[in-house]
Length: 351
Image (cartoon, rainbow, N blue to C red; front, side, top):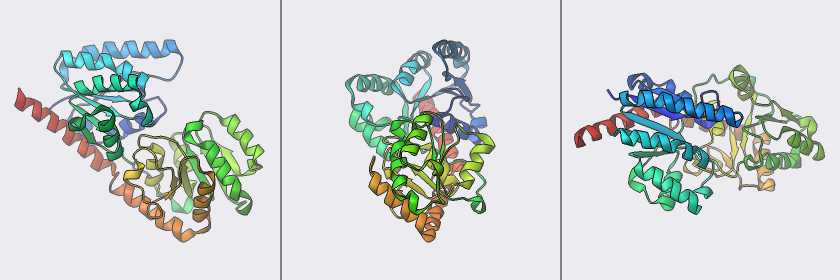
C-alpha cells in the first residue's frame, strides 16, 4: 500500500486548508495510506514563519525516501513559491506529486508572472486537484493543463444539527476584510433592519472588527450587530446552531468552507456566485444568490428569508441534502483514497 506525505500549512493555522485536511484526517484512507502531515507554515512574525519552513524541510527530507506520494496543498502565490522546494525534492526521488489548489479568486491566475509560476509547478505534477468544475475550466483557460486536472470537492463536516436552538441570527463566518464583503452585508442589512428589529447579524472572525463596528454605528444598526471574534470548538458549534441564515458576500473564493459549514448545519444561505458555488447553487432552490457588491439585491434576498419561514425551511432542507450527499465527508474521503490508489497503480504499471 502506498504511503502519502501531506504538505500544507500548520494544523494550528486559521483557514480553509487546515479545515479540509482535518476533515481528510477523519477518513479511513488517512490510516490506510499512512498519511503524515508536514506542517510548512504558521501564522506569526517572519522569524516564526522561517523557523516553521526550515524545520518542515528537514522533516520532509528525512521522511521522503520512505513515502510514495506527496500531496501538496497550495493557495496564494507566496504559498506556491514556498512549495517549489518540496516539488523539486519529490521529483528528484521520483515520487508521485499531487497539487491540491485552494485559491481565493481566479483573477490572479491570468497575471503573467503567476501564469508562469503555476504553469511550471503544475506541469511537473502528476495530478492537480481543484475544488470545482468551474476551477477546472479556469485553470485550463489560464494554463492549458486539462489532462492533469481532477475535481475533488471540499467536504462538509459531520456536525450535530439543532434546529430547536435557532435564533434570529444572520451569520457571517470568516475574516472581516473588504474582499469578504462585510461592508456589503452591513449596508444590505441596514436597508431592512428597522423593519426586522428582532434580527441580528453575527460576525464570527477576526480582522477589521473596529472598522466594521464603526460602520454599524454610522448605519444606526449597532444594536443589531454582534462581533464574536475568531471562534472554534464548542463556541463555533453554538454559533452555527443558533444561526437561522448564513451570508457569504465575498468577491472571490475557491470553494468557501463557511458555506460548507453552513450546509452541514442545515442553514439556508445567501451567497455571491463566486468560486465553485455556481457549479452547485441554484437561486431559489438551494440558496439565494446576489451579485457581488449589490447591496439592494442582497437586502431583498435577506428579506425573503427573514419574512418567509416556508422558504427558509425549503432551502434549509436543500442544504442538508447537499451536506449529506454531494459534500458527504465519507464519500469525499473515499474518492481521495481512490485517487491515491489509481495514481500508484498507474506508476507501478509504467515502471
